[in-house]
Image 1 (cartoon, rainbow, N blue to C red):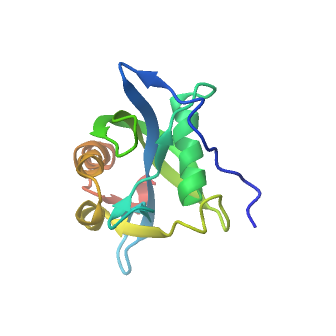
Image 2: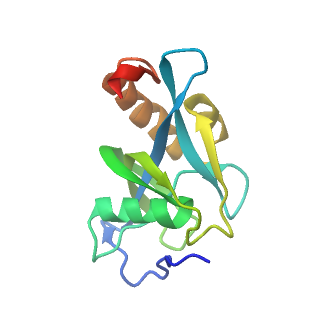
Image 3: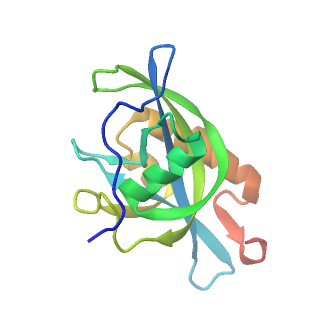
Length: 171
């Protein structure tokens, strides 16, 4: 049983210019490449509760928290991971199936430091660690794919100067 509880409801949700504001992240980790002195970057995606394809954790940004707190909370609630938010990758607009209609998501890169054994949505979510190309292919929503390819990948390339593989001495 999980001691953490997911927030529910919309009474504390933030809105701006008619759009619901949400916060999310692209959780990532480094995995050793066998027989090499490099590490491969993997991103964590979760299953969707409403159809095929995979998602990055995201959800409503509430009035009583910062956007960073909301992104970190969603990572714990939906994916069961904790870590360091290292970069705001950008803002992405999308149409929700919910009554709100348009949304704007603030998306961060989250360097995962801990995978929880239990988390609030573990009964309905499964985690999948994927390479960036695999994640782009399996992403359910075009805006999440864009955040991965134009936001995360571009940032990662600049940050590590290695296109997703980093020398062990750098990390």
